Length: 365
Image (cartoon, rainbow, N blue to C red):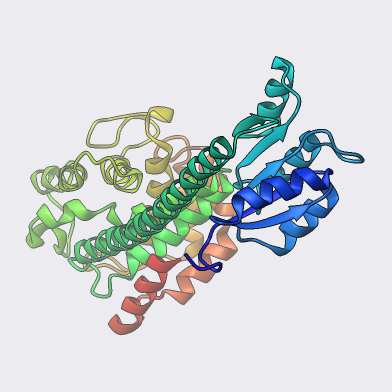
C-alpha cells in the first residue's frame, strides 16, 4: 500500500517518547501525523481533512484531551472523526468522561502494539463503513426527493389539465380555473391560513368542477334556465367529482376531493350535495365557493351575459351568512383590487396558447 493510499492517523501526546512509540507502531500501516498539544492538533486537523482517526492523550498542558475532543465533536467538519483516548488514567470515571466527550474507545498505557493496531484498524473500518452508509443514504435521499418532486409536478399537471378539461365544456378557453385558483389563493391568504395550506388550496381548486365531465352537454350548455329535473342532474357533479378523485393519501388530492365535494354547499345548509352548514363545511370548500361564484357571475356563459363588478359584489354581500361564510366574504372584498388584477390578466379573450402557458406557470409556481 502506497503512502498516499494509507489511512491517516493523528497522534496527540505531550510526551515525545510516547509520540515516537505510537507513530513507530503505526507507520508501517498508516500515515502517522504527530502533535504535542491540543492547539497543534486542531491546527493540523484544519489543514488535513484526510485524517481518519485520532489517538488522543488526556493529560496535556493547556488544553486537556477531553476539551480537544469536545471541540472536535462540536465542529461539523470534524465531528465524524473517531477519537481513541490513549492514556495512563485508568479509573472508571476517566473512561466515563472520555465517552461523554465523544470518544469511541479508551486504551490504557502502557499498551501492546498488537492491541493498538487492532483497535485502530477496527475503528477505521467502522468509520469508513459509516461514511459509505452516509453517502449511500444521501444519494438515495436525493434520488427519492427528485422522484417526489417529479411525481408532484406530474400530479399537479394532471390536476390542472383535468380541471381545464372539465371547464372546456362551458368555457372555451378554460381560463376560469386559472382565475378562480388565484382568487382562492388570495382569499386563503387573507383568512390567515398557513403557507402550505394556501398552496394546497391554490393547486387543488382547479379540480372543483371535474364532476362536470359526467354531466351531459345538453344541460351544461343549455342557453336557458334548467328545468327542475335538469338541475337535479347538475347537482350530482360535486359527488361525481369527488368520486373521480377518490380517497387518496396525497394531501393535494384529498384537498381537491374536498373542494370538488363541498364548493356548492351553503352556509345556511341549503346547498348540495349533502346540505352541510356553517363551519361543518370545510374551509377549502367555503373559500372556493366564493371564488367560483365571483368568477361565474362576472364571466359570460352560453346561458347569461357577464355581470358588472358592482352588481356581483352587491349580490355576494347580500348572500353573506346565507350562501357564503360571513367572515370570509369581507376578506374577499378587501382583496378586490388584487382579484380584479387577476381577472384582467386572465381575461376570457386570452388565447388558448397563452392559457396553456399560464397553466404551466401555475403548476410551476
